[in-house]
Length: 179
Image (cartoon, rainbow, N blue to C red; front, side, top):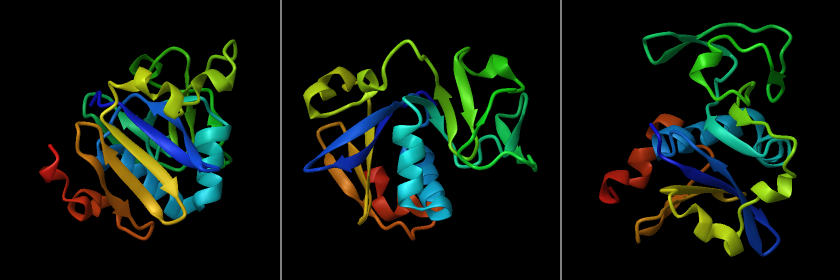
């Protein structure tokens, strides 16, 4: 569950990224990004994932719209009226399950907050990518789809169309070829 990844978006002729600490496999972060973009659209999803938050503990399209069932490592769907998707929930139950300085971003996951560090320090680019060599996967959120890359000398695995069922991402990419 501790597979690190980088989520990225185009930025002119280059890209910029954010770090995600957990569930970096395509069936985790990749599927969650597909789910989020299908629900909210690419522009809104990029705004929440890149502009409003600096770094992610996990990306989960149902975060904050579910309750964690302690001891089961699973979530159950619940209604949370009055909390729009993309907004922050500060009164987190089961706070011991996440980092002390993380917050739930409804419909997006757990984001780490540290207002003492400017967001620019968290931006990943080609110039500082070597500092993230522990990350196994990257996900470029482009207009064409979700470009998935595996950092084990394998390079780009494929581009997944935004219309792909999130549960099918590993089959579409034939992920087992890369592991």
